[in-house]
Amino acid sequence: MNVRLGILTLIVLAALSACAGGPPASPATDDVYLGVGRGASLGAAVNAAKMDAVRNAVIDLIGADAERAHAARLEDVLYSTRNPNAFVFNETMETLRRDGSLADGDLRYEISIRVNVPAVRRTLDANGIGSGTRTAAVAPGSTGAAGEAEGSTAVRPAGADTTIEPADYPAVTDAERRFISRYVGTMTYMVYFDDRSLGDLGDGLVDRFTMQSGVAQANSFLVGQGKLVVDAAQVERLKEDQRLVYEESGQGVTLLQWIARRLNADVYIEIDAQVSTRTSGQGHNAIAAVTLSMYETSTGQILGSIVRRSPETFSRTSDADAVRNALQSTVFQAMPDAVAMSRRQMELALTRGIRYELTIQRPADARTMSRFRTEMLAVTRGIDTISSAPEEIRYAVFFIGGSDDLVDLIFGVSDRVPGLESVDLVLSRGRSITFDAGQ
Image (cartoon, rainbow, N blue to C red; front, side, top):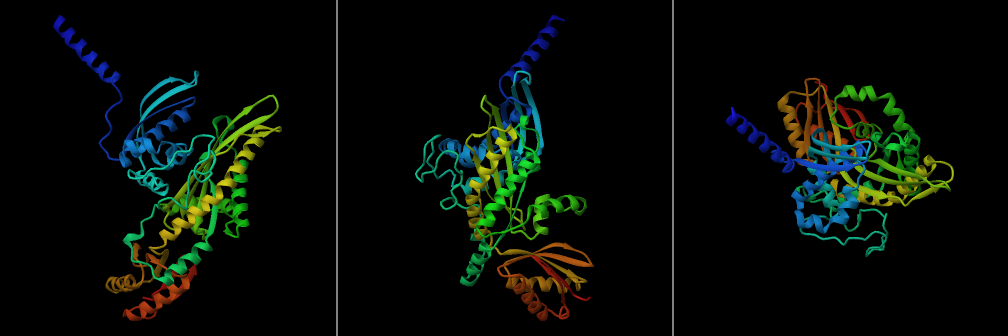
């Protein structure tokens, strides 16, 4: 009996020693990382743990030495984001350990979670952060080489490396380059906010009216620059009226991307914000941390993100008024860099071509449509089959040119493919083109 008790005691001590020795080993999946975070609230602790997991992924991507060398820049452009879910797959999170007390305002979380490594890599590339590059850190309250003070945008579009590598695609001609330049100069923008920013001020979140005021400020800047802008009221109306249609469509895109496609926006910008407030004897103070994430509508590819923190703003009226002042001014000041980065990234993205959705109703037989696809591939920059059924076939066509140019090209190709000579145009709207093959 004594021997058995001794063995049992050794087993228990070994188990306790393993627990005290540190967190569990990292899961075997390449993009699953451990993260540890502390915070005064559950949300703050979990978000800190998520970004710690992202930091571990950054170290894997560029190395520990480079991560330390770029620490200040990484804090600005990545680690301080108020939308950590943009860089992780939230549904994969597993809580490994939870310590501390909510009453004491000190919680500690250990988690494992899948990191969105491509999104992290795009952010690193967009800001010139890699294992072989160095960027000068800007001390708080000081100015950098370009005279940028603390609180300015963390992204320098003109000098940053790009996230999109066009080398895999054929070189563009001078005519195609001129078309891309005109296209980028006349893009339509859609701005809206991330619903996850909505909530109570006590949780660092903001109300719908305040976020709408941030959207209005962004649109005000765009209109002042002569840009084409989707009215926020259209976005809200479509968001509410068509939500059920979106959910039933089963499309693998976000609701905002789906709306941006429906409203023919070329770029959509998502605003996320988190705020902190304090009340003094003279009035109310607020600080807003704002993230602007820019996306190419047709593919949903992220074009970049701008992270900016406002100086402390003051209001004699209320906390909410101070928050609105902080959010509006920060969004307005960040928009020039958001537009500049969007333009630069779109110029690179379009070297593959503008993505059009081509639908052929009542298509011919499979062999004929295969020949059609081969002929199209020879005169475009790519064509992929989205879906195929006896009633219709849908393609994604990548083409540098306008929709009218693509319609003319399709007529020319169909004339060369026996069995498709009678195709007729049914609809051309934005980047969506529908033909009827009459079969």
